[in-house]
Length: 301
Image (cartoon, rainbow, N blue to C red):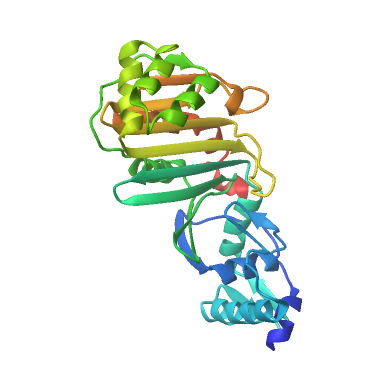
């Protein structure tokens, strides 16, 4: 297929049944391959990628990139030629990407520790839960899980946090404006951070949290949305949770209720935690999303 025809292929969708997933599948694609597949499946965007995300390439270079992607994907049998000008996308790959485009819930998980930073996107459909990240620039990795048990095992490994912990404690309420004010000064003014937090929290909790924020060794941020996430049209998440480990111990700060206008208006639960409690709170937060997955595999076909 000539390079100048690469963007004008007649695409044929795989016919028949609703997509299903094996128990687990891992796939990696280059940036241009993800763009190619999204265009092939007529999907404008998924969280973390869109069909126009090739930077500032001109039309000729886009055509060359699509031609290269076409050859590479056909070589790996991800895409199959159906005549000179038609292509079929492997049904597992198509189902994986459509899970992202038609997700009933989407979760963003950001982690930061001594090993570096990482962002993972989870999309929850009734036939698969898909993890998407970029382990290196220009490379997309997708892991699809077909069972809640496999997803929970994966989350447990990702949510592990190390560091001193004060042990589990009672949750206390904190208003979002107070939390924002404390975070704004947490890295440069410990005394002021303690003062702001102590206006609504017990002094021991305020002191420990302030110390942890000032010298955090690990952080975890999770946000959950209903439906899909469009990065060009941001909206408030349904629920949020952050965990911080540092000099003052391990603390969880989570939205206590979603509220009609999003998590940012909801009161926050602040509690000293253990690593096990922090992971459990994340799993509880994701319960509605996990429940979307159909356990009756036959019914999903």
